[in-house]
Length: 561
Image 1: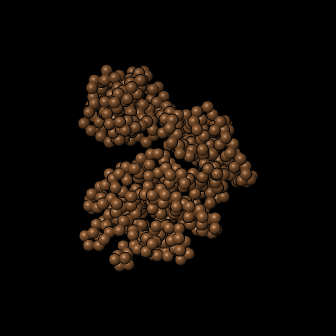
Image 2: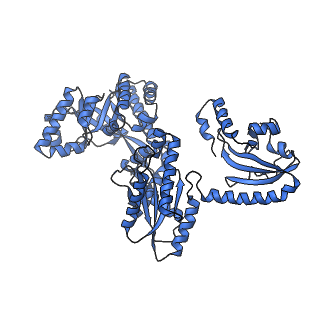
Image 3: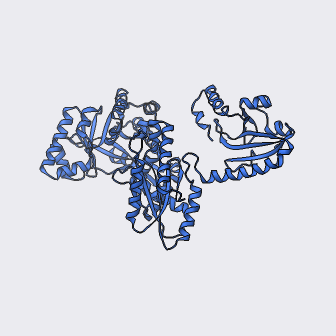
């Protein structure tokens, strides 16, 4: 049981009211006891009537009249989620039957919910002890084997039954299938936790109806489920997964389509532990997340290698940031009319002490997924501001530096205050720090994003749209959003320049941007043909290997000043 969710509400009185309504619903006296200190944290009304106010006292003082905890105290030694105990209580001078349950208290402490089931007289004592022991065994078995929400087998039972089936039928081919709901958090956010629980119960019922009394399925945790099956052809597995998917979406829950992703592990080595088989099935499932064209995938050893690589990067990323391994590289931007240096783009390079330079594509997508991109980008912003300040203090004319803004900053961060904090700290004009936003960012809540962009412009920042023309609604984009510059994507430039019609498209795109008072930058410029075409098209600025590659700050300073 968890009361920790109450901690989200800062009003302590509200928290107490919620707790009272839950713990006073039953007839039995109930207390909450801190597992580490043995302090009584809470009593319901029945416990107050029976014991008086004992909050703040220690349970061994109240019940056992002892100055120190009892050697056999069930409070601190509990491993199972719940256990029934009969113990002698000095307070009553009789034996009492208790139900102890592990809980997380709302202030984060590990605690035990102690419910007094019965105070026994001598004639009841022996029988009660036998009943209590039996109840404890049953409770522990139920907790281990039956999921309390969906009432289907738990992963503990699934591991055991799967291992048994595979080892007892070595002549058969088996597959482990794991699946979960794509963006299940969104279901809870949109429809509420109760509806989310209804969805999980429904999936449990689908599996129960599909497999009946077979013990070949389970709820693993949260929204993740598993089942195993014997098969003759891979297609048999895919067909069953598709059937389950359809049945999950045949419901009266009044929610949008429930998208599930299936990961499939084909059992080849029966000595591999079942939990590792499930992990590998999960890797396959994770590999197709967000791909609406696929709902199932088979495990491949490459997934394991990729996972190990991911795990290694995540293990090192915080240390790398603290040790200054993420270096700021700058790629110059040149005005096309006279090829004059007019700015630079800030790029990140991970210079590892043993591996050398790690390519951005190996860590940036991962950081965008796990949220570390927020810390990394803010670090790069500060490096850019620090550099601008150094140029000014050295008497050099500073050029604007463009930095990346990810969707995480828009959704999860106090973007305006963070940026203005840096501008104030280094005493800069906001115009010197250009904010670069990818075009794909506008697919998710464009109105909300545009409000943020307008505010940033009001503060004095210049805004660029990166990867313009990369396949989204580009024409509508430059008509409806508030930005100052568009950057033409290299792939867009290459593909359109391949034909005369394509060149016309680029020319008209640049003309239209100019009509809307937008600056146009072309990135990925690599050939003289690119440069001549862009000059003739009246593109404003270019960057790319034709002019200069990205370089460390020291080299940039030598090269450009």
